[in-house]
Image 1 (cartoon, helix red, strand yellow):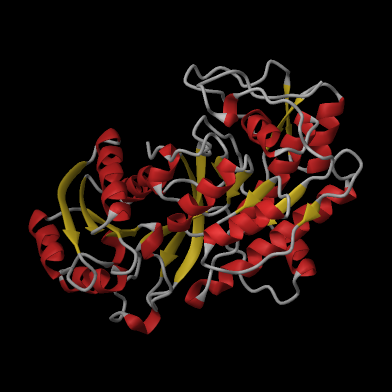
Image 2: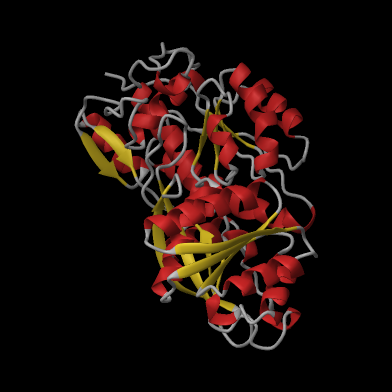
Length: 406
């Protein structure tokens, strides 16, 4: 018997029952949208998707037929890519990387009833974007990092906290979530100052005047300049905690020992040696693993959802993704399927669970995955980095958080 989502809010494919309408061949498309300085992000996503399809087909494919990975293109014209994938009869699409391009992909693909799973989108506003229930992401929203940033400050002995955030949605949303997380953990936020890139001197002065035990910097483009100003104000080094957008290998780009003892985080998990070896076997020239685990898991989840639904159509995949991820249905929080669940960590294991009459609960290379009714994962994983005297960061631990930043 096929497993599908239970009935829920009208118009949401994530929690609606779906009739089989596929053509028997599961086709997976990719939207690779990284150009310029970010073009290195294409290779790990492509290699991960190729590896996942290879593993799926080695386990028998979908209903005995090979799963197809459609030929990829690289373009910032996301709508055009999405339309081309619809024309190629994609049932599910993986991507895009850039959150700002997600709406263009969602609009085209949801209208065509094609499921979309991004391995990298993190903009908080996408949780409520109108997708008809066809949009999911294996990457956590930006605000999920807030509780980890607050925890790192508290672990360092802080009782009072200052937050410097870059102007824009990212800075404002994460800063607000950090303030909430700090209060929940018993710390006081004594300053919250906004700055524009290249203009952080006044914000750093406001933080210094508040005399905080620790400073959380929430920034992207303006991070280096803000760190320099904080260093001038005597608030860098071990007092400093960096959001994901501010973590970089600064080296001589900052003053000597400016970041000595500072900590920061990046989303995801450190790939296992075995997973890295498998990826390099697919692409011997691979140098970076960013979003590889999230991409691999997105492809596997799509195939498991199709297997659970016994149908390759996008509507069936969208309806099955929440239950096969181990997630809950809609607002009532009830289990998405009455079948007994079985945690599985590979496509083959999930297929075995289905044959045993169980509901597969896939947890993969990126860790535990449980989609909620917004298509968001409910648990976020982070790698913690600590800076040395050379202003270079090294991995020093891992942390997890709920996806809402609490």
